[in-house]
Image (cartoon, helix red, strand yellow):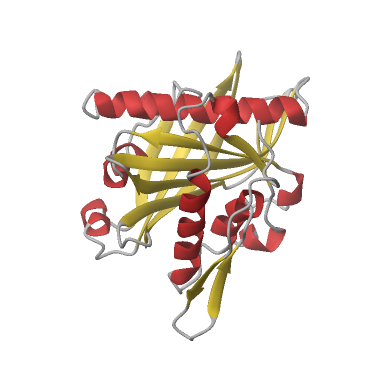
Length: 264
C-alpha cells in the first residue's frame, strides 16, 4: 500500500462558464475525495479537471505492478457531502479510504453492461448469493446516447464474510465527463443508504465509493476508491486497508473475466 504525498500532480486549472478557474487537488489523497464532493457540480469543468489530474497521476504508476503498488490510502470527505444521501448520522472522517488503479482491456462504455446488471452476483465476489439491482432513474440507451445526463440504480446486496452475511441497500449514480482529448470518461459514485449489521461481530457502519473509467490505449484506465467504516471482529484499520485493496482487485478481475466471456 502506497501513501500519496510524494506523488504530487502539477496543478490543473480549467475555466468554468463564469470565467473563474476550477482547481483540482494536486495530491491523489485529496483528488479522490474531490470527485465525490464535486459530483453534483453543475459546471462540467469541475469533474473534468479531476479527470485530467487523475490521467496525469496514472502516468507515474506501473499499471502492471502488483495491487499493493498501485493502491493508495486516501482522505475522506466531510459529513455535509453525504448528509442528504444517507439515513445514518455517521461521520465520513471515521472511514478508511483506499484507492486502486487498474488497466482494463475494455473501453469505458463496455463497463456499463456490468454496472447495470439486474443480477450482479457474477461480478461481485463478496456477494455470491444476492446482488439485485434496478434502475431507478434514467434509461440505459438514453444514457449511452447522452440524452439523459445521469443514470441512477439501487441494489439490495448481501455481503458475505466467512459465515456471516449482512444485507444493505446500495445506491449508485453514473454520469459522463470529457477528457482533455474530448473523449468520454464514465464516472460512478455510490453509497450505502444506512448502517447494517450481520451480528455483533460484523457491522458495515457506512460505505461510499467512486468508480472511474477513463479512455486508455484500447481499453480503460480504472480508478476505484472505497471509503468504509466496518467493524469485523479482530480487524484494525491496517488490516482493513489491505482487505479493501484485495476486494477491489477481486471485483476488477471478476468484471474483466465476465466481459472477456462475452458479458454473460
